Image 1 (tube, one colour):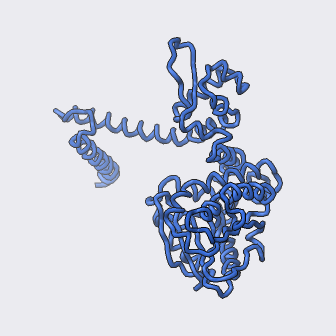
Image 2 (cartoon, rainbow, N blue to C red):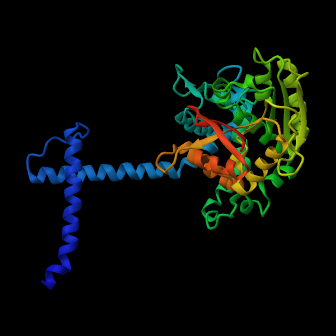
Amino acid sequence: MLLLSSWAKPVLAALLVVGVAGVLYLREDVKGKSKVGAPQSWRDFAIGLLRWLLRKLQKESDQLAEIAMSFSASQVAYTLAVHGVADALEAGPKSLPDLAKAVEADPDRLFRLLRAAIALGLFRELPTSDPRVSVFCNNPLSLLLLESHPSGSRFLLMHLMEDCWQAWGHLHDGIDTPYALPFDRAHGGESFGSYLSNHPHARKVYARAMTALNSFGMQEVLRAHDWSQYIKIIDLYGDSGTFLATVLSTKGHGQQQGVLVQPLILAEEGKDVASRLADSYGVSGRMTFQAGDLNRAGAVPACSGPGEAYVLRCILHAQPDMEALPVLKRVHEAMGKHRSYLVLIERCLKSGASAVPLQQALSDLHVMVLANGRERNVEEWRSLLQSASFKLVYCHTMQNSLAIMVAMKA
């Protein structure tokens, strides 16, 4: 009995594992997913099972290798962007020697870089009569890397690679406590806000990047909500003012007023851009500007009457609750006794880890890495609003994962 008990458990466990694997193997074969024919003998079955297990292990190994190397894809795109390859091809296709000369790159290394980029879906190689001659051109995805592209995607890529890359390298030692900040650790204790204040180039790139980021899904946001119901819209930290100018210029909004409050660190560059944009939309007489720091008292303009709306678009997700709460309280105070509204446009995650798509989960980690922020689900938003004496009266989640949440004073 002692001898039996010493080896029985591991043997039984091994038999159980083999049995489960065998059932899965046979089920997959029955469904037509496996290329292995029905086993004619136990020997055939064992060989087929072993091959099936090896394929599964190889597939998982390849998947892990792909995850481990995913950092290289962003560097490929960034390198092509800063070397202006898309800009050099804007006028039309170029041969490899001509393209290398235009962007001042080594032809062989540029070819290898473009080969990887094409595998990622960036750029296109044109067929030629001579296989030794390579000719490249832009495709719809690589056009986003143009400096002049209205989406500003190139600047978002530059911001992520130049300002956030090192911070993500400290993610592993940024989960020790709720207060660890990978960005600060990567930049010698300098916070993200301080970093932007002290680096003019990074500040300009960041401003363009936020304009690009806020433009994603903007048309859906405009369609999904009745913005005409507000007499005045106060857009807090509204980047370049594109959203506000678009709302004010919409047919039927002719009497609507707008106030654009821009961050102090971006006000110098942002006001001129917003002013020109308001002129181009024909709303300069109804759109005013001011700079402010939402983390300080007096930055939120006072409400002048009922029917006004304060809009915060993708701002509070970059702040932990203890920093977002004072901002909400300042908005609450600015409303005074008037019947006005707070409109939040933020990601609204589903509850549970497995219900959240990869992009949303990574967005949550990104704001954690930069500034200890967080993406929230609807109950977390409701709780945060209640803590600032607001009540959530409306929540609509759109297909782009953003939600429009309307709150009023409780």
